[in-house]
Structure formats: C-alpha cells, structure tokens
Image 1 (cartoon, rainbow, N blue to C red):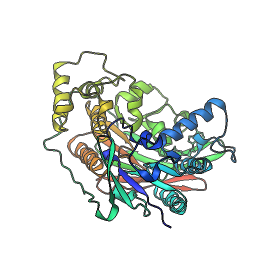
Image 2 (image 1 turned 90 degrees about the vertical axis):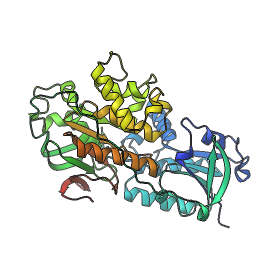
Image 3 (image 1 turned 30 degrees about the horizontal axis):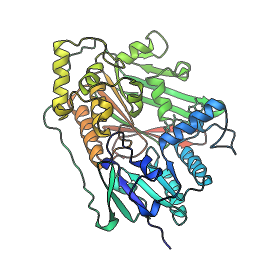
Length: 413
Ligand SMILES: Nc1ncnc2c1ncn2[C@@H]1O[C@H](COP(=O)(O)OP(=O)(O)OP(=O)(O)O)[C@@H](O)[C@H]1O
C-alpha cells in the first residue's frame, strides 16, 4: 500500500521553531507518527556528524571510503547522510530542505533514491519551493503558532506564486573609493590542484567595473575555490596569475585592503555574529566590515542605514535582533550590510539557498535592483539556474576529468 507522506512549507515555520524537534519526540498531533522512531535529515545534523568525525577522527558517514566527509561534494554528503539515516531503521524521515544547495544532477539522484524509499518509510518534507516537493507527497501540513493544525490533501493546497518590486531608489553612496584599477578581477590560465586532483582547468575570466556576473556550476565544480582565491586567503591564488583591482594577488595589497573594496554576503555569515545585532546595527556594521558594531556611526551613516531600512520595508523590524527575523528578511539585511558602502565589488555567495518562493522573489528583486542602480560590480554565485535573476554575463564552470573548464555565456542560462 502506498504510504501517506507529508510536506510543510518552510515559510510557515517561526524563527527558532521547535516543531521538528516536537515531531521527533512525539509532541504533536499526527497519529500516524505517534510512538514511531524518526530521523532528522538536515544540514544541521550533517554538520554535527561532520564535526564529530573531525574531532574523533572517525568515519561514521563514509566508513567504506578513505575520504573524510568534509572533502565530499554536497551531493555526496547528502547521499552518505541518507545511508546513515537508513541504518538507524527509522519509521519516518523528516527531510529538512533536502535539495537545498544541490545542483540539478544531484537533485535528480537524491529524488530517485527518496522515491524508491517511499514505500518503506514515511516522509515529512520541509520545502521552500513548490517544484522541490517529492512526487510521493500526499498531504501538506498546515502550521499555526508552531503547531500542526490541519492536513490538506496536496491537490487541494493553494500554492501562491510571487513577484516583488521594491519602491524607491537604492540609497546613494557616502563612501568614496579612489583609484580603483581595472580590471577588477582577472584570472589568467589558472589551474588549481588539490593533491593530484585537478579542480580548475585553465580558467580565463576578466571582470570590469559596473558589470553584473553570475557564476554558475554544479556541486564540486570549484565555485568556492574561485571565491576563496578572490576574497579569502587561498594560497593557490598566490601561485597563479590572479589579479585583483589591477594588482597580482600576493604582491602588495594585504587581504584586509582587498576586503575593504569588497562587500561580501554568504548565508553562513550570520553564524559569525555571536552577539545579537539589531537590524540597524547589522546594516551599519557594513561601513566598518566588522562582526558587530563597535563604533559610533556618523549622522550620515545613520541616515544611510535608515534609508536602506525604509527601502526594504523593515521599519517595524529596525530594533529587532536579526537572528530572530524570518530568513528572507535576514538575507535582505545582510545584503544591505554588504552593499551599504557601495564597494567596487559585491560578492553574493548563494544568497537564495533555503528561501521559499516569496523569499526568493524578495532577494532576487533586491539583487537586480542593486546591479541596476549602483556602480558596484555584482558577482552572484549559484549552483542552480535562477530564472528571474538578470545578469549581464554568466561564467559557467563545467567539470571534466581534468578539472572544471569555464565559459562565458553572454546571455542568461
Ligand atoms: N582543501 C581542500 N582539499 C581537498 N579538496 C578540496 C579542498 N577544497 C575543495 N576541494 C575539492 O575541490 C572541488 C571543488 O570544491 P568547491 O567547494 O570549490 O566546489 P563548489 O562548486 O563550490 O561546490 P558546492 O556547490 O558543493 O559548494 C571539490 O571536489 C572539493 O572536494
């Protein structure tokens, strides 16, 4: 007999929701899962297992392989977690955004595996976008105040489609950058190896002022490696012809000087902030590139932060801790933090991960707006094609046996 399977819209969950814990420990109103053993298939569980592996030098998830779980691609990590989960013989699996950060090929492979398992186990899938929902899902769980209030057969569930526009212009720059040399970034015949594995194969890529680029490539194709050569301290950059703001990396400018000219966003950035920051403090900290606000901002800086808050419709959240906001609003705030100084280069590393359709529409609208209305060069990085993003160019990484090759596509893919 076909199983019943459930899905929950991630946007129905409150910040710091306890719902998934409660489903696991039996504090819920779903009779079919009562007194049954569950397993949480989530990024946070994967992260904990990886930490334990690293700490105790064990191989819980990859006991048949020699490689540590950290060195595997996102797709391989999720497969390993699924195998591990099934060994625990649970009666149900909570799949918390299982396809997030996976490229198309890894999504297909994981979907197939889950569909195969669906006759043996009950799923509770947390989804962000309608197209992620597994074909075997039969009911959507309605949530109110962190509790399950109803089960709607999926054919009766009303999915909302979203479009969004921010009213008003983005606030003007109050920071000046002198003598920014072009090209902003140049990779010349760049080859990167980790041990004997070639990761990047002869990368040639030049980025100029005021361009809007999308960097796209499947899991493990080398996107993070490229970003770490630009923004981070990846030693591979010093061995290669990588030029930032007209200078060869490693010949003069310190990492700090380079970072001053770059605004950076990654979904993980919030984890660096150990103390709670209000929306306004967080946006203002972008002027100082600091993790927290330790200086008294000028009147001009205060005005600029207020203008961003206004544009993003966050007035009523101004004094709320960013950590307590829904994830889409957190993204808006962190992107505003990264752009507030109007740096020559803005790097947005996977800003759409874990967002539902409404959240995606909000963040996409903001990114397109920044690219259009500012003189900042935008580098948007994504493992999947995002249909509404409007870059001028796409740099696509395609894996081969000898590392990824790169191609410039002069159109949206
Ligand atoms: N420090 C390292 N040591 C060994 N291998 C590494 C190291 N860093 C990255 N790799 C390998 O390099 C390849 C490219 O990884 P990278 O993280 O740059 O890809 P990505 O495109 O960002 O992937 P994802 O979309 O999964 O984040 C992967 O096969 C990865 O396992």
